[in-house]
Image 1 (cartoon, rainbow, N blue to C red):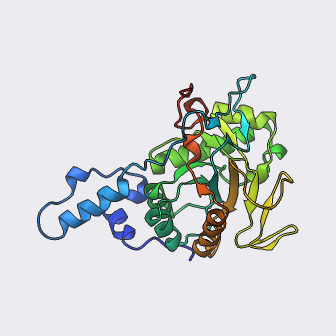
Image 2: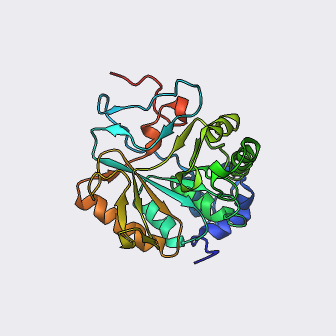
Length: 282
C-alpha cells in the first residue's frame, strides 16, 4: 500500500493543489453541467467540520495545566464515559481503505505525524484530515528525545510543526514523543514550539507487529490494570501495512466491551490544545 492515495481524492487534490497544503475555495469550482455540481458536493462534504459528540457536564475532569508552566504530560482522561481515544503514530504506510473507514464510519482519531516519513504523501494525510483527524506533532525523524540536548529537541519539534502547519493549515498544539520518552528539556522545547500538552497513552494495540507478551496484533495495557479497556484510555497504534483490517478489529473489540471511540480534543481544554472550554460548565 505504500504510496497509495484514497480513490477519488487524487484527482481532486491534484486539481486543487492539495499536495501543497492549499485550502481550495469552493466558490472557485465550476457550477452547472460537466459534473461540477457533483464535484462541489463531494468536496464540500470532505471539507465539512466534524462535530464529534461532546462529553456531558460533570462526566469528566479536564486535565490541568502544570504548575511549572510547561506543557503537562497526559496519559489518560479522567471520565465516567465509556469512551476510548484512538491515536495513530508515524505515517510510513498509506492504506487508502483506512481513510474510507474513518470517513464513512465517522470514527474520531488523532494522528501524530513524523514528517520525514510522510514526505511526498501529503495528499493521503490531507484526505485523512478531511475525514476528521487532526494532525499533531511526532518530530521530524523519530529520535529518542531524552538522548538529545535542548536545541536538538527544539529543532525536532518546531520543524515538524512548521511542516504540518504548511501542509494542513493548522499548527500542532499537542506533541507525542517517540517511544513515549521525554525529559524536562522535551517539555521546554515543546513550549518554545507552541505545543500546549504532551500526550502519551495507557494502552497499545500492536497492529502489524508483535508486542511483548501479547503476540502479533496483540493488545496490552501499560498500567497493569487488566487486559480490557477502561474509561478514558488513550490507545496507541501505528500507520502500518494492513491498517484498515487492523482498525476494524480494534473497533470490534471496543464495541464488544461496550465502549465507543471519542475525540480526545473534546476532553482537552483549549489551554492544553483541545477544544473544550478552559472552565467547563458545572
